[in-house]
Image (cartoon, rainbow, N blue to C red):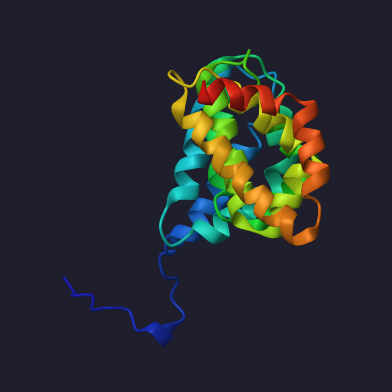
Length: 219
């Protein structure tokens, strides 16, 4: 038998295809998962899709590229998913939204463009489930802390009413929600004083019952 040595690279022989880089694999998987986000699919299957997308957004090294890919192809489908009624699925959708919004002004601006901000903050109402209110409060807090523009977008989308609703919650059972709301209001008024809008904001908040809610907190 004749021993066969290694094939020289310059011989023109076909080499075995190399596996794609991790970033390429993630991109392909994200596109596949986004194609499965449809409100009429089974909630259990969509929960798994949202959980996997959230995991991909948290991966070190590819966070920015995965975020950009999701925002390019997934913003509108995510907005549509906020119309579902299954509580477990809604929670996973809101978790994914919060991961997308984490410190990213670009993502938050896209959210404002496609109508996602009011779609999320509506879950701050007292009649919604506690875990949904918590995700909504986290989203509001991130908008207030990212940039001046993000804060302005929140106010323009009804954020003041949502914050008044959060402060109205039972403090002893919802301390984290109330403190998130108070911290967000502090950020909003710091900005309002600089822009001379504090009187307008006070009137809006008073209209939505914030004064009474604050009195209940200190009682």
